[in-house]
Image (tube, rainbow, N blue to C red; front, side, top):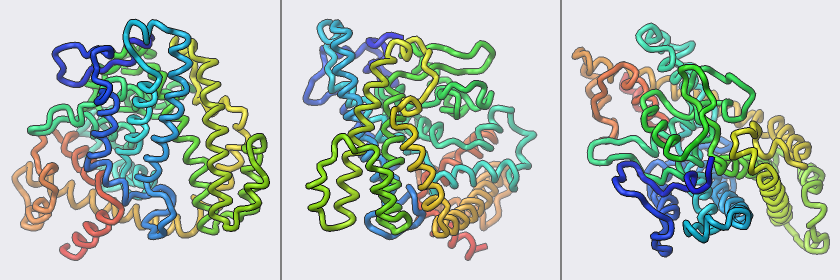
Length: 446
């Protein structure tokens, strides 16, 4: 893989080449990507989607939106620091093509901002709820009418693939979705493969899948334009990662490890003594003990430790990337960056404690149970109505139900796969609160 190709400014539908040296630095294409994500309805919906505590009304607990903003900030720092090193190593990128260190930061920041844009309500339990509706629920009846890969898309409904679809899918009057640069889409694509074969290797790029069958044609176009390396020899589609996808993933890993832990402490699910014990190992080289001891509130002390811990992990991730940059370009680095971190043991200790005290707390479990029931109810009623309407046998209730679909979702789909995925995507775009409102309305009417 070559950096000058990986940093493509091309957008869907372009008929002429976009050159970096001809860009207006006051309105750089990669920064436009960030703006387009920020102003999208899909991004705004993240303000009422679960990060740790579903349906939480506590003001200091992170939502998907605040999490995404923070991941983007960390991603920008990672990108800029890496970009500086890349330009020092390959000066022609700047001298001939005009790339700047901040370009790397802008690409990673935009991709990181969008990294959770496809996640359904109620966190990762929302993905599982959609998948299990088809694998063990009422959706099982559709299996024989779909191809193997179409079925896998549904039973393993994946937020990353849904995100790619949201960012790139056309609808009447809106061609190419947000029309982000291919470089940003490449950095967004953490798992550049289709849903089957499932986990064919231990390569981190094969851990999940990154696009639905309906989006594979454009996915291939992006991958080939960027010069991503193919890594599948059979009839399946799969590529090695865009190098900057490693930084997007690292930013996410850093934030959810440290900031979810911070939420648990502020909620009283993890004691402050544990926080100091676990975080001190990450900050022992940078902490100013006199400053720490002068802080009078738990929130301020934890905030200070969190900032130092994130700084330590950013510097470590940059070092790992730079040391392995040539392997990454060859498609020969099958690990997440933080798997090779000198702080891996400390991160694993924090995650283990978070799983025990936060993710498996009674409040989280109770609300995830509610989320399962809500999503199952929504899928059941809307899929039935949507299919009945297509087949010309809609009941009065079906017709009423379809009238409450948002205008952009009230469109016809020709195949069963497209209709099922369309309703899954409608449900995935709902906020936690709106999913609850829709579910109560449907239950009352039915």
